[in-house]
Image (cartoon, rainbow, N blue to C red; front, side, top):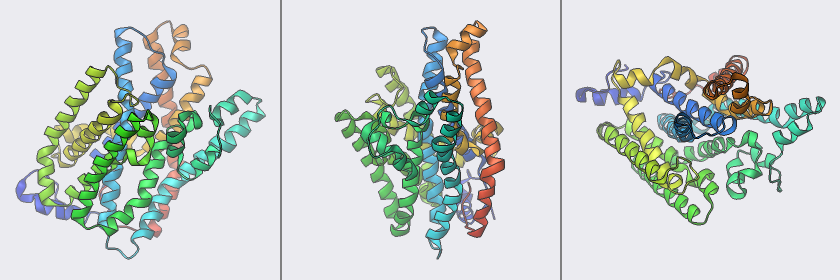
Length: 412
């Protein structure tokens, strides 16, 4: 039986117990948070690559709002930590624990990822070569800093974050810069099942807390060594948001921890948001490369999103938080977020190469505001159409293979 109310203390134990038996129900608010994450990242890269900066008030406000969109990746990490840990906790006693988990992750993640690599490294260069667009080929697949071994070796093995972290983003083609976060998640998927299966529940909570502390410490160390990119993209420096998601998952299944989490969520979220505002005001920067935002700021974003996730999970149906997080537009973007994330940066780079940017459109439209709106609108429309086509023609057919290895997964 599924108990809908999550707020009344007398039903808390029954609610948590019933959640442990849920196998197919989706939580709309979680989909909504996923949608918020991908929209944030899309707007960040649209601004980064296609919109020039200006001194007008509205331009500075727009740049500041879009400039914090990179934090959407940390929201993705928190959600992944929560969902994957929940899946593993529910199936930890199953005989086919590893086989089911890895098979189901593979059919969800690998097809689109490797299809995109084939598109970027093989099909697109071949097509552009036929059209004698040699410059486009070089911009598409050649890093600005070519070193050995080839970056493709890292891409095929989900290790691009290590390539970027150790050699800088210039050692990876811009078209796949954003794949660093996919590499971290895949490395997490590879190791975390062994940790969950091995550690007892109490020790697993301690492991998560330790990962939060270790990740922050390593970011500080790398920034002290003038290795800001490494602090941002190396796996051991970015496990704190994933671990926070794991802490939420562990609390979600335990009435005692869940009661404490629900009570602490709003104060912690408010504290994290307030501290981020103060931090941005003091430093005048929202960029993750800034030493304060790249160390303390990332930790605060993880805490903020972790608290937000608890609030969404604990929200009473029909309440403000539930309605806001379950808004249909957010759920829509959440459903197609994987393809949206993979394809958006190559698409915006292709548009910029074709001359679609704020400067060119401002000359055509005669208004910078319209030009910025047009850039975002065109890019958003195209990336959504591609994601819809990918889902219906490609992704969902691979997902049907999950039926070969049914699993009692938690709410997704």
